[in-house]
Length: 106
Image 1: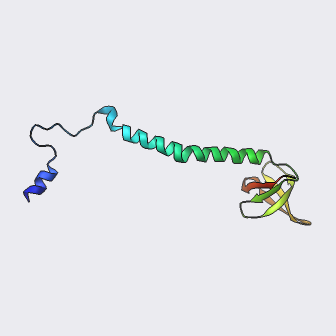
Image 2: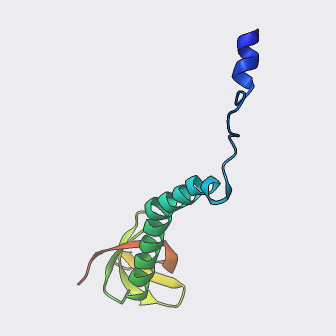
Image 3: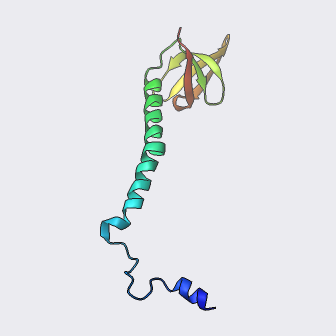
C-alpha cells in the first residue's frame, strides 16, 4: 500500500512543484485552437463563401442540382426561390439555399 501513497504523493522532498506558470499553461490550448481553426473552421468558411457566390451567380438557363437530388434547368429566380424545370412542362419551386451546385452552364 506504500507504493500507492508514493505514486499519488506528487513531488518528493526538494522537488519543485508541478504547477505551470502563467503563459505556459495556455500554450496547449492555443495550439489546439490553431489546429481546429486551420483544419475545420477555415475550410468550412471557405466552402460557405463559395456556395454563396454560386447562388448569387445563378441565372436562367443554368442546369442545377438541388440538395434533394433534383436535376433541372433554372426558369425563374427570385430573392429566395428558384423555379426549376425538371421535365418538359414540369416546374418546381425550391428554396435558393437548397441548390447544391451547377451541373453545367448552357
